[in-house]
Length: 156
Ligand SMILES: [Fe+2]
Image (cartoon, rainbow, N blue to C red; front, side, top):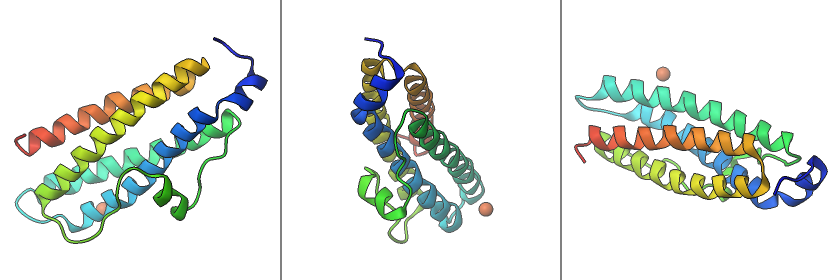
């Protein structure tokens, strides 16, 4: 059902929660990807150092798009690290890891995020909010592609 903008602002709390969860995920991942970029070691250093840089760049873009979409639909984006850690479904970096552990952890994070994005896409559809649905759908396609690449890199 298509709603007028005023109704939309009052009734899209579930969608706003989905967008804030993704904002939190990408904020935590942005910090974690920097850690992986800095601390990765081994024969794949140059490949992974560069890949993690590409991914934290994408994370920065997603956080800004999600926050501004939240504002555009009358929501309030989470905007502190403590909120991000509370809302995120991905875990932050917590100590030394091998390159293999880093790629496996990221692939797992991306699969988790893809599943949550599916729920967000359904929610956006129920709200008749095509722009939010488009944003989440684009992110899901990219996240699934990156998960496949990371799994292939690890020989899985
Ligand atoms: Fe760098």
